Length: 246
Image 1 (cartoon, one colour):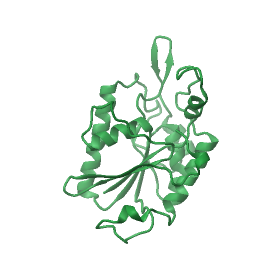
Image 2 (cartoon, helix red, strand yellow):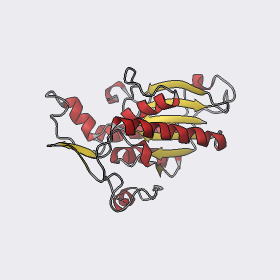
Image 3 (cartoon, helix red, strand yellow):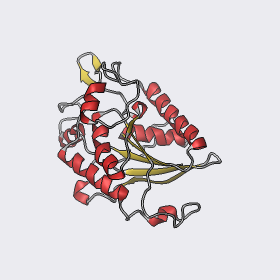
Image 4 (spheres, one colour):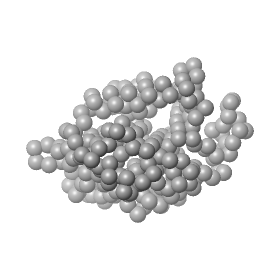
């Protein structure tokens, strides 16, 4: 099973953080930021790239894929319930003619929160009706209700790593029955780092970080014998230099 790990496009918080010169906590942070104009353009370029014929052939120099196709051939698309991930998935789903499925567990570290007096305060996240109004065809799990999908405190590091391990275990389980599928996950920078470490048995670890720029692509193959092959990380060939953002 091929798994493509994709970070969302540039969000409002990403842009504000890049422009902030007074420290990481000094800018006006949004609890569930949308994409910026650049983020939307990045998502459009990603969608075009995933359906194009410019797939790097070196990625298929090994059996059983050698010479079989010239594009990604993605069969399933998952995204987190965070606004920026939902938005990034929209042009991709349209280009691929795939109905996206929201996978709550691939959200970013911490959940929906703001830094406030006394600590980090949790917020509910988008409700089922709010998501349906903007993303009508998305498949939503029961965990997303009219009370939102988060509604809890800031996620601790232990819970965060446990969630990454659970997602990795789900991917391994799917590989037993979905070995021929090519799955794309549109997720978040810190979570993608943790998920790669979970797949490679590197958790817990804070000495290594797998960087993902906005809409970058990482490919991980899960083989039938349980091996994990990391083919590449953080590819942004679909973006021009002026569109690359962290």
